[in-house]
Amino acid sequence: QVQLVEAGGGLVQAGGSLRLSCVASGSILGYYTMGWFRQAPGKEREFVGGISIAGASANGADSVKGRFTISRDNAKNTVYLQMNALKPEDTALYYCATSNRGPTELRGYIYWGLGTQVTVAS
Image (cartoon, rainbow, N blue to C red; front, side):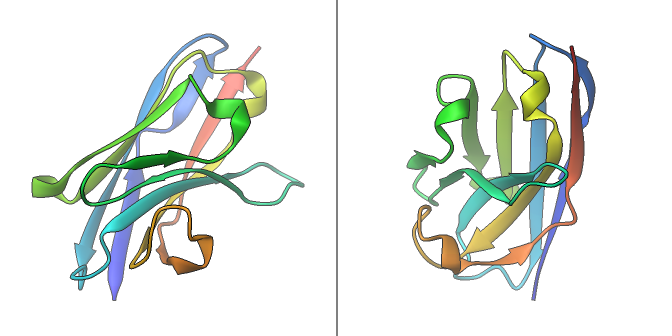
């Protein structure tokens, strides 16, 4: 079993920045790919991006390219999501997840955190 705990969400004005973090613990051996997803009310969950243990990142939604960056600190079992130039449409519950497959193999993400809320005010 893998436990994931997200942090860093909050309320921010449009154009602002936030950095989310996600710490993994438990039986993480083999579950090295980490990813970020988000879900807004009334919408389907959306893949934001993922990162391999080697640090190779993969973007998901086109809407976040150039604004969001994923990174990780393997020594701390932590993945980060730096979000810049935030827009009201980025408002969502942001989840991290871990996988034993590649970053873009979405079915591999089987362990999930509870999420952290990001709200962007216009």
